[in-house]
Amino acid sequence: MRKALLAFLFSLSLGLSSVLPLAVSPAQAAEYTLDPTHTQVRFSWHHFGFSVPEANFNEVTGTLNVDDEDPSTAALSVTIPVKSIDTHVPLLNEHLLTKPEYFQVEEHPDITFESKEIRNVSEDGKRFQVVGTLTVNGIAKQVVLNSELNKKGPHPMYDGAPAAGFNATTTLKRSDFGMDAYVPNVSDEMEVRITAEAIAADAYAKKLEARKAQQE
Image 1 (cartoon, rainbow, N blue to C red):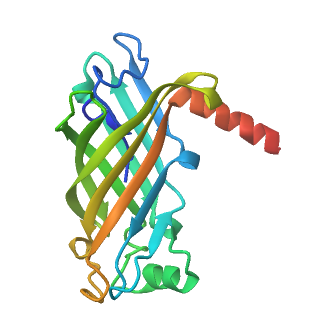
Image 2: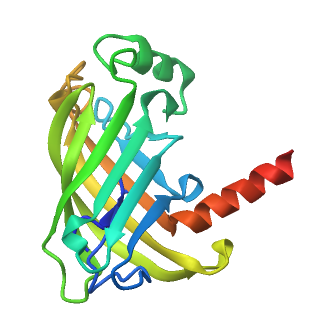
């Protein structure tokens, strides 16, 4: 499913109708939601050559729209609030969110990813590259996600609703997005790892409402 396969990122939401049929009826457009409780975007960097710290974003949301008859029109939209960054070091979190050489949170509060195409699909359809536009600090760059299908089929936590799960990796240069402080002592390149689950949107919404009702 071309852009459908992109169900993430950083998933992270990907597809090729012949490879990843998400149980969509013919001539029916379907919408899928990234489950934020099972979708993660993590990244790591080298610190003076001594260590390789890791961080993640605690909030990731995304929507995938798929037309089974014409998967080339599939579209993914992912949003990550910058303020949800978690380096596991409170002082570093503060630096990244308040220092001008890092994230411009007030002007650009969100990181976004928009899918463009799928390429280099393996014969079994489980490995592929997702090409899309990543926007950070208002700067848009093309990125390639080296992706792999984990599983597709009915999800037991959503009453058997259609679902698909993926992993993806890529390498980014923070200097491409205006954040080159302390390079090269703190590496410019960052390794990014994404894992995601995409759930049929109506089933996800139903489950969400049920959870809210239980909390009231």
